[in-house]
Amino acid sequence: MSSAVPVAGPTPLRRAPTQQRSRERLERILAAATALIAAQGSDAMRMGELAEKAGISIGSLYQYFPDKAAIIRTLAERYNAQGRACIEAALAEVRDIASFRTAFGALIDTYYAIFLAEPVMRDIWSGTQADKGLRDIELADSRANGAVLAATLARLDPDADRERLASKAFLIMQLGEATMRLAISVDRREGDRLVQDYKRMVMRELAPS
View 1 (cartoon, one colour):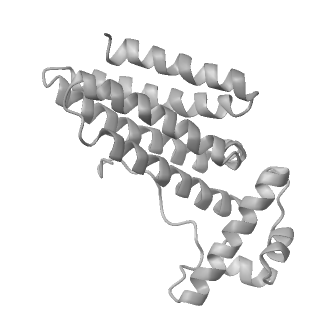
View 2 (view 1 turned 180 degrees about the horizontal axis):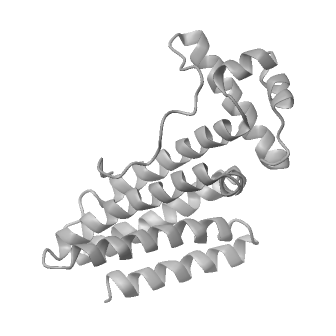
């Protein structure tokens, strides 16, 4: 990931855990939040309900997170980091068009598998759309992912217009995120077709055979 492209602002945590017990409590909070969002959506989650499910007092919960948006942001950043790691690993060794087609095609499949395994990502994304700060984080993440893709494309074509590469890569990554969320919002058969259509469109644009 390009360190020149920020993917997040200051930590949403009110209290950064330093001791093992505090870290375990934080993980318990986030696991409980994930379960609640998966069951009823991010809009319906309430801080009191979350504290009860995590087995802590409401005061302890507020020691870590000032509000629900901070919890959603933390979860979104974790999923963003997981996605960035996949992108970096998939494209790191690409040096020609053939290896790009193989790597990027596999990356799309891997990313889709992550969304299928973690459908709560769709609800977390919905939560980010209601808050401008969270939307900005999502856009910054797409730009950062796009920077990785643009750098890969520049390796393949050193004479290419870098500004156009950056714009194209940003758009492709943003559309990829939207495709994955749409694909897990419909039935599996239709979702599979949508992902394959996205893959074909991207390959026609970036690596025509």
